[in-house]
Length: 529
Image 1 (cartoon, one colour):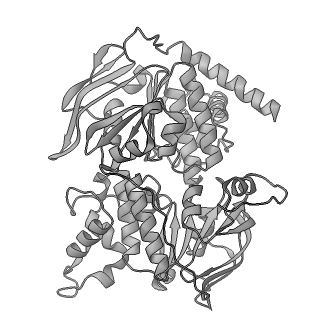
Image 2 (cartoon, one colour; image 1 turned 30 degrees about the horizontal axis):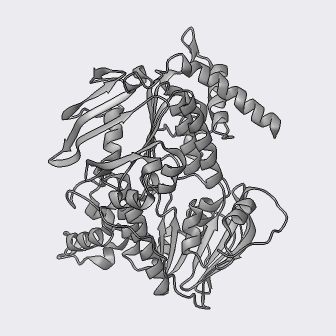
Image 3 (spheres, one colour; image 1 turned 90 degrees about the vertical axis):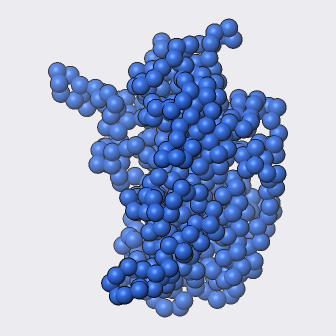
């Protein structure tokens, strides 16, 4: 273990030496690394960012927080040179810049929606901006060396030659972070970098970020997780409806004040009434196996029960729920409502009243070029609408889409506009609304609050509790352990594809659950939470 830590420290030092040659250090007398004043951006009459001022010093972490649609991602794109502001100016190291290439200034970003090439390997994606070559021929040895170095920095152990499209969402997140670290010599912008990471992976990433801060890198950290702001950031900037509404030094900013600034009203974290599960078994899994993802998984899910699946990246949680829904072929037996399902397909499972919200909304959940209206009604088109004349259009689709959007607080500028025009969080709420609108008997939720702000997360938690109280059985996958503890009747822990323990409500202990998920340990006493 000490040897591994020594190697990691040595690798980190080499990388920092490269970065230190280009980093602009601030000794308190020099100008800010980056300063924006009066920044404004409007899309088709919709104001995304309005008169925003923000300043970041070298060796400083500034958290940018706000609800979905507050303008955080638009601000990031302006600072990366992806978008041009309609008004305002951006100064970098004291000089005004416009129409700029971020890489030339040592600016890099980890985007909320991944910017990876699925058919290319892990190594190629990390080095994609500047692939090493000799005499016009790619230097694969050097490419692998560089990729391995940056993956070691964040503690990721990935096959360098595997196509990125074959990785889980969490593993793709690590590739995205490694790629950005290679490019960032002065300013690193992180847009929701931990949404697919479990707690140990988050802690490892935070240690990397702190080291980069110590060596003078300026960091903008965009997050929905309030706890992360207080663990990591020096200052916080709050955006609401595209405007900078407050913030300041994290040390002097009480948590309840920050939450109030984000949602625009006093925020009280509430307990969720998840009801009492019935004795009727609605889903039974026996000996389910899909090598190398999971082995011999068996459990029961009862009506009105919320069963949480916990585990680290690579534990097999997503692959397991996809197999149950018929998206992956597997060995073993699955019963719905007491009936054994043979050769199940997703369409058949859906017709049984089972909803499925996937982990990766962009690749697996949304029809990106279709309208918000079509996305909201896609799962229940036969139930929600009536054809005026068979084969010619629908009646009621628009009204039902508007009702779903209102119920799930999906912020939009028009129900007929493409869903990819919405912020990531609003896309997530639309996807959840699509499936819950069919009033399922069983609901499989894979990271349902990924990329969602605290106000929307509270709404989603309340909806999950409401559905459970009315008898819907819910299989919940989440990398957010506090979320599992808040919502679950039981939590099953997976490690390397195998079930290692089960905990019942009243005996949830975060430390014990994490230990079971992380490594083989002796049984320990668990204290009720």
